[in-house]
Amino acid sequence: AQKVTQAQTEISVVEKEDVTLDCVYETRDTTYYLFWYKQPPSGELVFLIRRNSFDEQNEISGRYSWNFQKSTSSFNFTITASQVVDSAVYFCALRGSGGGADGLTFGKGTHLIIQP
Amino acid sequence: DGGITQSPKYLFRKEGQNVTLSCEQNLNHDAMYWYRQDPGQGLRLIYYSQIVNDFQKGDIAEGYSVSREKKESFPLTVTSAQKNPTAFYLCASSTTRSGPGGYTFGSGTRLTVV
Image 1 (tube, chains in turn yellow, red):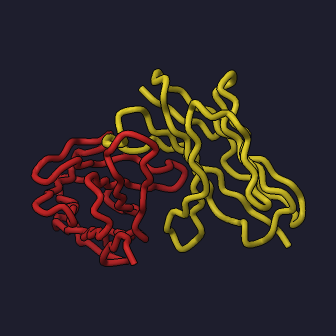
Image 2 (cartoon, helix red, strand yellow):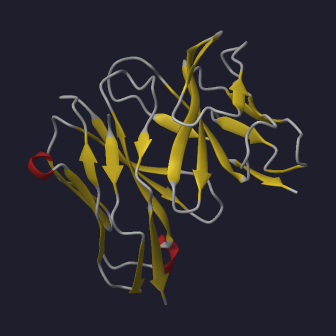
């Protein structure tokens, strides 16, 4: 069975601070895919990143960066110089190697609050 | 533009009623999914379908039913057997081809029992 754990239920920081959202996963698949989604108050899920299990390179996209470490089964997400618009619920998700037909396994989400 | 359309955005149900949530996609994706979201619970899989006329139960299928008569459509019926239906429902689709298939989500339907 697959499992995704986001231990931080809620994080509150002041604008311009850096913040890291943790994600730990469990899977027996040797090939798998990890995702991060952002859910603003409007409710839709906004895709942020997809990472393959065989590609451990870290990724940076503007103020966002992701640290994938297979040794610790973690896929953490850092926002640098946070902004109020970053306030949202962030989900980490996992898909196994079955072609995606059985859907994504989501963590419970981290509610990020950026205070002005 | 391709995407997923969920309707209605808000839905109110009386006790004992069945209601149907609509989900339509024009992405030519093979697979479609229904997720339920409760506060603090993340998203949980209700049903999924890989091809037309076939669907599988997810983790919390009790009290729900689906159909997949067309590739583009995957409606979800919340039956009176679902004891706690108040939640946010998200529909998604994806390709089932091997490889890092992407998922597309609709904007959701918020169901409230009154």
